Length: 222
Image (cartoon, rainbow, N blue to C red; front, top):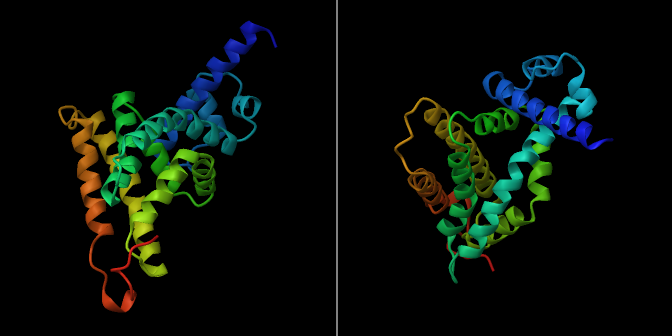
């Protein structure tokens, strides 16, 4: 492929990613077709998604990857900045902070956080998120070290708090993005927004556990 055609293809892919992100953020995964995405991207070819990506899932995957590359850079920096004896709050800051900082870098309006929330709530697309998570060595390192700082919880407690953490982060980011679009959050530093979420999550993870749900909350993981 010639250089000119390569550049044109890259521009078209970027347009399709941007169109998919906005449409899905506002309407949901199932409500948006590949043809609608092609039209919103200004493509006369209704099969542009298939031509440039292969399938709608491949387009969703490419959209996630396009954002995860810069987020990974922020995660890596956070990993190098933790202190010598980091605790639960420090690792939660590394989970939340890069995402919030990235939204600040994107500026308003942006649609990635709401796109991510829609994908995470769609059963047919959730597997794409797990694939992206597994590909991030930095994120897996942060998660491993986070779990190592926790008290010993029963499987039930761990599962519930994991699920709540995911829901809180995903929906808090979508709320931050939505508020920024409306001008409500422009005067709030991203660091303050990060700390509000981290404080809530820290309180949840270190909250007392009802006796019948665990037998060893005072123990610490090795």
